[in-house]
Length: 321
Image (cartoon, rainbow, N blue to C red; front, side, top):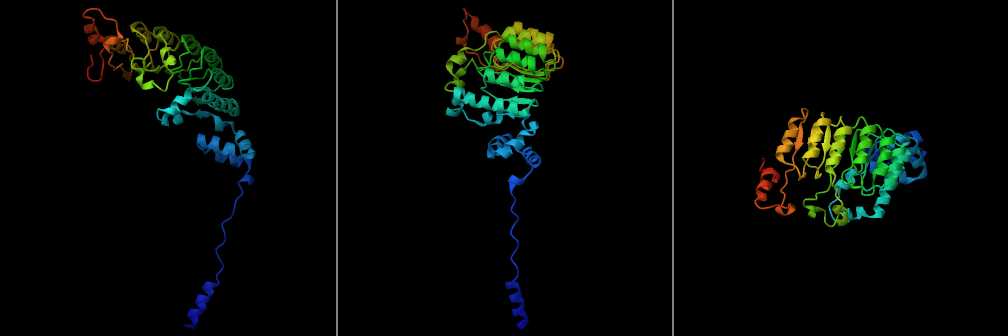
């Protein structure tokens, strides 16, 4: 009993476990901080580390490689249609995107290699392009304020481009495609899709109606320009383009290396014409056909004209002509 009591007393008087060591993050060297920041996601870097304090912000700025990519696309993709997406079309939202684009181009110090944004302005794009000679991927889809002016700057400054997405940018014309094709010899991917003009109901309440009505009409000229000045393309998207057989037939004459051709929603094309073009693209692996139903009201038809409509323009996954 005595020995047991003595053992119990020793246990009661045992020294407490040492408290965990406290570390002051403010004492970390800029090199260590920058290394830690390199493991952060884009949002955590911008909203967390950069916004914490001046010393952290200065540490991040010592490593331009941290800002080599500005990809806002996940945030756009995760949003559900509604008031939030409608707000993207406001000047206030454009200013927020512009601020991030300008900051990324400045902080990257010439190392910016990838940009994926929407709703940026002409001035912000030109600003970023002039400071990003190594830019390889540029996606500015649905940027209604972007025009040929800034795209000419992109062509002159970003000659290393391999991928370009100018979908739904209605103020960008075939002139920009010509300059980009001449300057960016390594371009492999081009996405020039437009909003669904056959049935625009999916965009009502989100995209301004006047913008939907400004849908580009020169699909043939754009296709011919692409064929002439972008011979090394491997991936081409022209969803809902208004090109006809004239523009389509020019593509295999110039873009002989195409592996992917997306023509979804191109209502002015026929199955026969698409098949003929596909046969002339020897490297083609993926072909996306229009696969849409065109209402009779979309065409001015004479007597019995609807038979031709059914024969050439009625294309769905069930009825493959």
